[in-house]
Picture 1 (cartoon, helix red, strand yellow):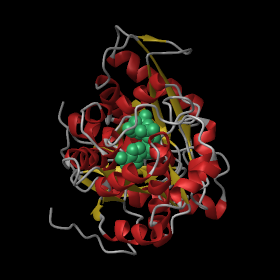
Picture 2: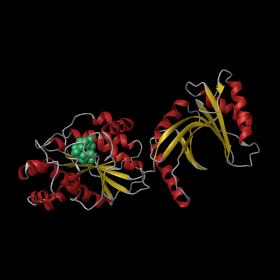
Picture 3: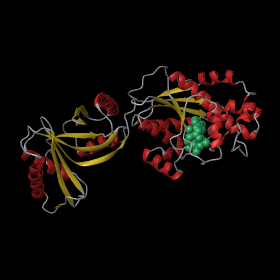
Picture 4: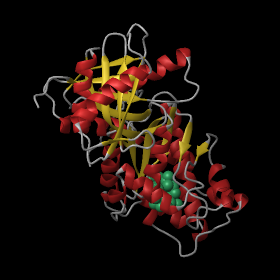
Length: 409
Ligand code: ATP
Ligand code: MG
């Protein structure tokens, strides 16, 4: 059939308690975030229409393009659902035809129903009547399909607004949450492992702008982990979930620590130093918290005593969104997010460097502080921060306070 109606994607969101001013900020932020991420797609404009956003696709777009746009949008924080359909006049005959076009584009289905509503009573036909009229048109167009009111395979939604109507049958769930840029900023410790990208993403999904910090074993190891982290960041960038990453060469400092600190305390010491460096970066970036991918008891260093001993290294709050998650849940999340494959590749980072045979699982803070006193941290920390490379990613709300510098490698 000849394409004649404008294709649209309707973006639904539903955060409880979105009222008044709050709601308008939420919508504006979401529009900006989606707009920036759709740069490469044939999108004409995005409008706010009564409680949802309408993305208008360029004339002549096919279904495949519309689905690609919908797939790009569904992973953006703040999006509860995306529907692919058409815009048409407020004319019942035309609406019936368009509804049939929309239904024809659904994958295998046996049963359907119509769900019509009008936002303006200036349209004389009420929703019950619309259901009947459009339902009859669909029964005529699809005589072999059945109408089912409860749990049909497909629901054809018809929404009549002030000057037009929107009709869709294809609809997918989004990831929910809040638009990035609506909940402040965090600094997230990002290894190339499975857990930390998921932890970062959880904060982004709650609306935080995320800045990653990766500690590389360079120059004591290769820079392979840095490339994996960059690959991971590019996956997160697709949905606007990461603003920048600091790549911190850490190998020489680990070597020094390994020379001066008893083997059992090394890991705690590396981690305390990582936290302290991340805290300085957070203060430069005006971020309100650190984030890690730790999950209780997952490995020897992730005990309550060790969490206490590392947290005591900094004043800034440390958030651990995966603390109660099982590894399998985290793996599933990483697979959905698209970082799992990258994270499964092996690359030496600072974690594999100078590891003791039996790390302390219940570090005592006084012993830790005693050992740490042997290290010239005040001299080290500014040097470590200075030596970091800064990589930037597309995050529409992020306002850079520090220029990105990538140093010669
Ligand atoms: P992940 O899968 O995230 O690497 P893990 O199971 O390997 O986690 P640990 O090595 O104990 O666990 O690391 C715990 C957390 O410390 C990580 O989730 C991450 O937030 C942080 N972290 C570990 N290594 C690094 C690193 N090289 N650079 C930055 N952060 C790191
Ligand atoms: Mg790891």
